[in-house]
Image (cartoon, rainbow, N blue to C red):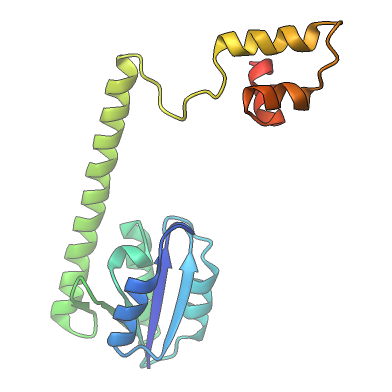
Length: 184
């Protein structure tokens, strides 16, 4: 039996493309999951690994849907092999039931990890370059230093009986945002 596994990293992503490809590949059962591939806590993958039987074939749309690290990917494929279960990656054209497929699996796995490491290096270099120019990452502050001073003045003014909620509303922020800004 062909068993599919589809995973997206966030709730904002869609499984449709993967599900269509897995159905087209003849999967009779498809496990679906939302969560990072780098996390080891993937309950649907664990359920799949418990349910899979000798002679079955695990099918994924792409290698990185199964795992984000080469080490984890190789361990999973070895676990499948020890259970006499085949593995197929549709877009990577890998089928470990053949010798050529096993070779391709190892090559593509190494290339995928290499690509992720290159992307990570470039991202870090870009962040460091921006930091050296005085730019900080993250979202812009909701309140300017001047607005924070004004909010403090309003709240500390004994003649004014404005509540924190009212002051936050005046500046168009939540209470927690106002408290956080006041404590900085």
